[in-house]
Structure formats: C-alpha cells, structure tokens
Image (cartoon, rainbow, N blue to C red; front, top):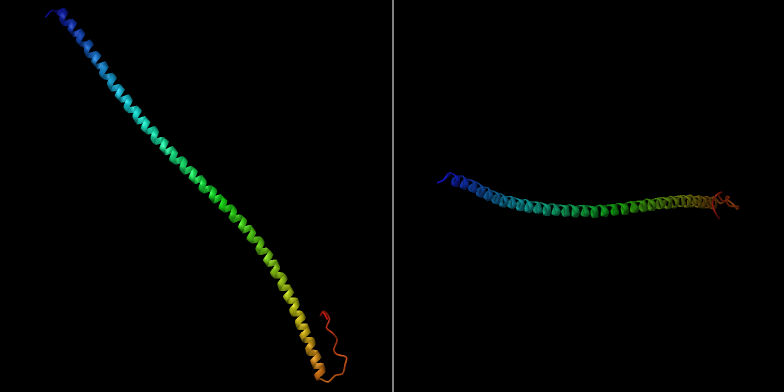
Amino acid sequence: MPEWLFGGLVTAGVGIIGTIGIVIGYFVSAKTARTTAATQAASQVEIAKQTAATTAAVAEKSNEQQLIDQLQEELTAHRAEQTERTARLEERMQKVDDRNHDLMRERDGYRTHAHELRAHIWDGKPPPPPEWPDGLPR
C-alpha cells in the first residue's frame, strides 16, 4: 500500500473516529441534559409540594392562632363581666347584711321594751308605762 494512501486512510480514519466521538459525545451530553432537566423538574415539583404543604401548615397555624386569639378575647371579656358581677353581688350582700343588722337591732329593742312593759304590768305598777326607747320607730 502506498504511503500516500496509508496517510490518507489514517487521516480519514481519525476524522471519522473524531466525528463518531463528537456524535457520541452529543448524545451523551443530550441524555445527561435530559436527565438533569428531569431531576430538576422533579426537584421543582417536590419543592412546590413542600411549599404548598408549608403554606397550608402556616395557614392552618394562622387559623388555629386566630381561633386561640378569639377564645382569649372572649375569655377576657367573660372574666371582666364576672368580676363586675361579683363586685355588684358583694355590694348587694353588704347592703343586705347592713339591713339585717339594723332589723335585728330594732327587733332586740322591741323585745326589750316588751319585756319592760310586761315587767311593769307584773310588778303591778300604775301608768304611765316605761318610756319608749330612743332610736326605735313607733
């Protein structure tokens, strides 16, 4: 085989092998790019799912927090109302106790006067009866 043919075949062979290498490299690169794109897409989908789950959890926590806040406001209002009611009842009970004390004092005064009158009668004393006690209504 002549040398020029051998050199031409070697040159052509190197060119063909280089072209085949480039084509194979292209296909490998394209496959890698597709795999990477698919992985990134799956990753983006997973991130989107996690974001949606996180958003839902935050919204749920927000709803739970709103309910907690509402219940705390209602509890505060009920406590204030109960405190006011308790104060009114204590004031009323104090008035009832004061009135009861006054009535018992009057009752004791009437009872004492009644005993003085009976004693006056039993002792056979003539009129006038003992004086009406001070501070007792007639």
